[in-house]
Image (tube, rainbow, N blue to C red; front, side, top):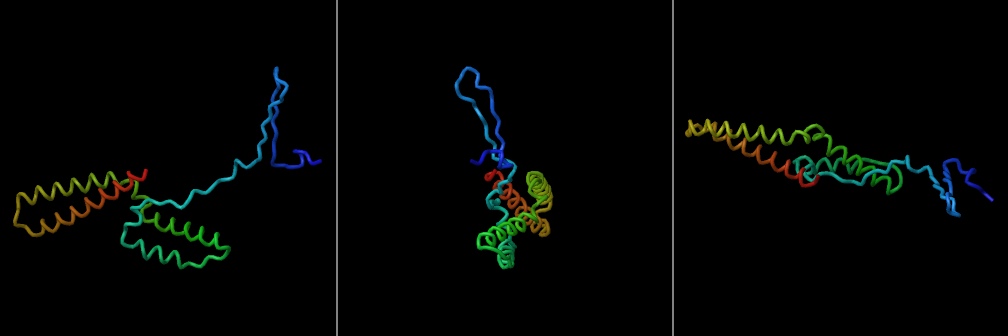
Length: 146
């Protein structure tokens, strides 16, 4: 008969039975240290960039050798890294960016009120509105997914 001592990763801890006729034991299988990978999950706003589709195509065309499951998991892992790379340091500052964009837009609109015929200010205002709305959308998408 094979006992628990023949399996090196198994550990058994016994506790006193006190007034019971049973002896409680805990068996540890040694599998707690194994890290389970999280599923493929990314924020939707990472795919809203204009270069995301060519990036996906490029990552999907990479050659990976192994089983079908390994190939699929590797391609997803590489795709996730590639999508997150440009935004690695930008995501944490979305709130600050939206506040700065709003302040710049407000300043431009104040100048435009003083000089309503200046076409350069009108163009600049359009650019700042576009920048402000895109940062607000990215911030909203991030907050919805957290």
